[in-house]
Image 1 (cartoon, chains in turn orange, yellow):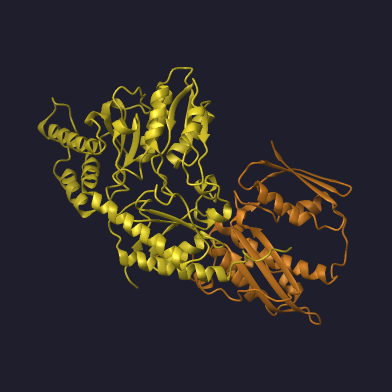
Image 2 (tube, rainbow over the protein chains, first blue to last red; image 1 turned 60 degrees about the vertical axis):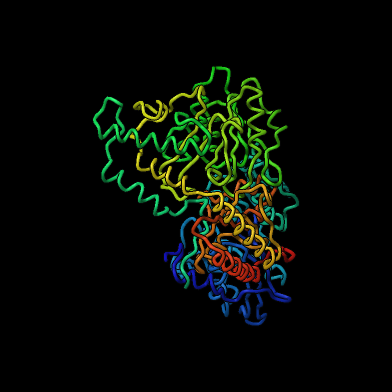
Length: 211
Length: 389
């Protein structure tokens, strides 16, 4: 029998490691949504003295590559310090899994993002975000690189979907080259908001679709 | 592991050995092209064999033999129906109507025609996937040349009231095409009863060979040829005739019985019943009774379909899903979205399509296995828990 994934991916898919929820996590993030096809929640417990991730759990609503990546990142991040875990990349997760089909990249990137955002959530919650960088077009652009264009499986910036970024006082305006009634429009808008609205000096986010 | 159980028969069916037997001599002995009546004897024999297959298939639709043209399959049949009628229509007749849940041969051809400047109305469907005849009546205008509404849906199996639709089209002097790929031989079709001008049907869904389909073209229907080529198939579909395919197609159709269709319906109902009994949070997609006998389509909420199909595959079952992850385009099923479903309902939808070669023990096992798979995936699903940022 020939399956669409390699044996390592299938093993993680069949018996994912560190699955479940956590009471009182120190850091937690949910990324993706059903509209996107995948959704991941990551929970962290962190030792405040050593900054080591002592416990980690994940949940996944998604395809095999999403579940397998969720599983492998828990293996990679457990017992690492926050700083070490921040450096875990999708590339690394994919290599550990022995490679993933390119079309499934966005499903697996999501799990890694879940880890990074859970760390961010941990730092924000514990007042560990040191420098308050003012929001500029560049900051927005960087954040939009983490918003997927589900049509292509790549981010909004790389797929040239962003037509305009305007930062004016506390108001951020973003133009997206998709009709507002597109299947993925509401999801893309939600993801953009998730990533921009929480910036310390942003009061309002406007997302403009074509027509 | 017990033998692999194939439940994706709406994609393609396994060939029946008896069909293969019927086709063999055409490949090996009676292989000449069909010539005119003035050709050589081997070619004249081929012509007769082809015409016999044509007559045999026509009889299943209560059509005349010369109303059937052979094509390479549903995709080509529907292309000829849509493009051929538009091409033949008068200059001011440049509008067609299709349902929003058509399969890709009709849907994508319609979109293509739209890019060429043809007006296209995509009719909405109700929660079961049924077209409202009143909406159709309103949509037909002076410029409308063709209405193309499928007989049965490829994913959710919903049957349309094509009799009512045909009547409306006839009353307004508009051509009516129906894609009967999935209903041919599974649900009775009488061309006179349904007032159809064009019907797409295919061998691959009834244990016939792939690469052969048919298009019923009612006598007198004005249709232009869409390819350049020879005069084959009443000058509508040029190219060397696929006589082995035609013979296999006719044989396959002759093997379908009312008893078989009744058996499929019993198995299908049993499957739905077992799944609904064993698995909480499921939705049957489509209509409970107005559906193809071989089709069951069920959404398993809070889980994603590609994960279900992979787990089922590893347990020895082939099923299909409307999830974006499963498709090449990464778009969720347009059918589930059109019947009012959201992405979650589309991503969690699983299509079971049955055939002659399935039996009750397989159905019981399939229901059992999918209940375990869904339970396992729900344990790890973040959906259903409050989402916080």
